[in-house]
Length: 90
Image (cartoon, rainbow, N blue to C red; front, side):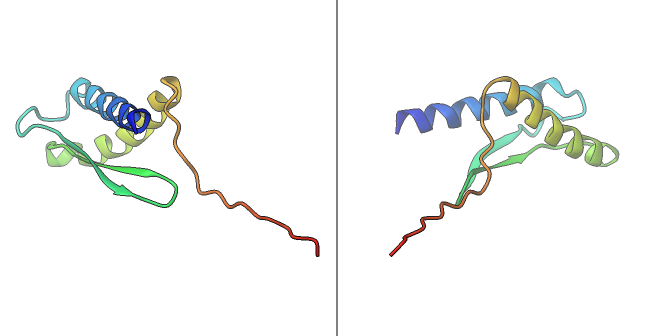
């Protein structure tokens, strides 16, 4: 369980750092980051950050791309759905 908790903490820390470094994200109210779902093949996060309306889409798309890049750089895997097929020859 510690390994999973450590990975969640690492992912949240990386997301927090990205938010803190984006000048378009307002400091007040504070950014909210939490595990929102334990899905079939992933752990999903909810990130709520306040921005000016004109910056919304830029932040939205940039943040998705930046999370992908930094997770890859820091060795945080993004899981993809998998199916295991067992063939029984009888």
